[in-house]
Image (cartoon, rainbow, N blue to C red):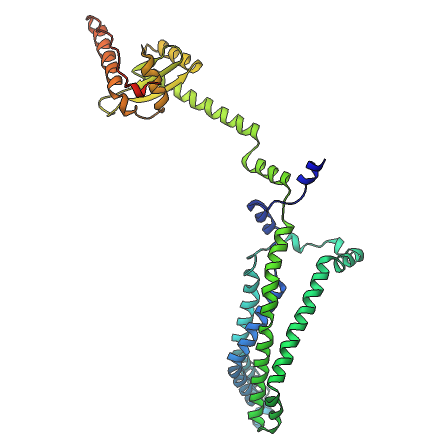
Length: 375
């Protein structure tokens, strides 16, 4: 029982397939703190950098929009033209900032988890309307964590804001003694700078939240040992299916091999345990090639097919064992066995010639196999 219980514990890291399926379903790590930090920090930086240009365009819009002659006031077409020009001037001033914020709002989530779109996650779910489920989420450990993060974020931002206001207290008080335009410009700079400082404080919150979200996402996708085994079976195939496939592949390979036996020049045998079929064409082959070989029952089948197709069978146990141990089907014979195979093939070719011309049968050779090549 203990073993079964432990096997159901989610102790295994998620596999690549599990992560891929989760991403397709829209389950990717996300950090709201990272998104907030990116938008606030880049937005405040953009205000400081683009603020003067935006202010200039807005000033021009107000000047152009409210500076009208009597003739223009009496002409409705001129009024609409002035209104269109003023809107275009304001749009040109704030458009770069809007584009920047749009890019940041879209790019920041991609920094953590990448792009993930799932129609299923957008579907209507009735369980979300259940008040008991909502209360359960609020008072869950995750809800408590969100509350702690909100309080921590408030304390950090408030502390830095108070510290900044205290350090710039003299500048804020001096705004009332400055000329109107100068004071307005100075106030805008202080506002933008304070906004940037407070936004920078969110970097600390995001630096803590991002690793937590990655860890939490990994914990949610952890798998039991049985789930990992089942996935491996689905991915790689069940053992019985793989065994059947291997058997079919071997059968097909053997069938192709047996089709090449009739083309062989000689079958070198053990005489019963091994059989190796060799083919040699001096015009196309630099070295003899093994076209088929087998052991026991397969050796019997090779000899049987060879007899049916009148292929010479040569008994040479040491050479047959050496060829079977070192050779491979479809490849040239091993170099150390060149001389022994040459003796056999020379005899076979002389035998064919003697039978064809009715000459005396040549003496059967005893192929020499190096001692270290014997098996």
